[in-house]
Length: 131
Image 1: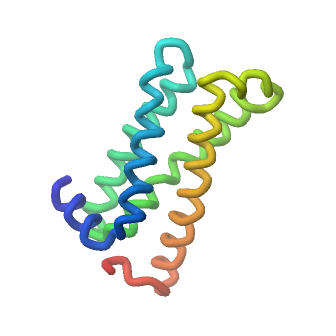
Image 2: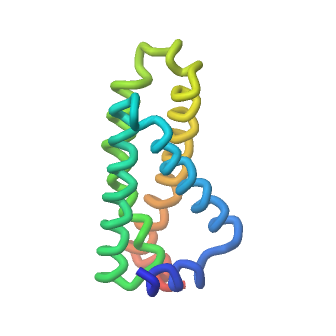
């Protein structure tokens, strides 16, 4: 895991590091809601599984850029959250938990956009996976 962290830090700009810290904060904030919301438990589980998958991907590829492919696990989470927590529940979005879910979903969508793009560029040979 330390090797992965060193590799990621070597190729990551300060702006991306700030973004990665934000993602960790927003995902780990689910801890505040796990006592009352089943969805928060799924969010927490998802970040744990994502971390495990990221480590596996790095161990196989040794590419810090391919670690973002682990975020594929977020797609079912987004679908679940939209179906269960968002659709038809506009009043719920005005709560603290609703605001949290909105921030989380926006964060995930932005991250997935860049992760899918980077992964596709690497797989198509248009981006060096190690730089």
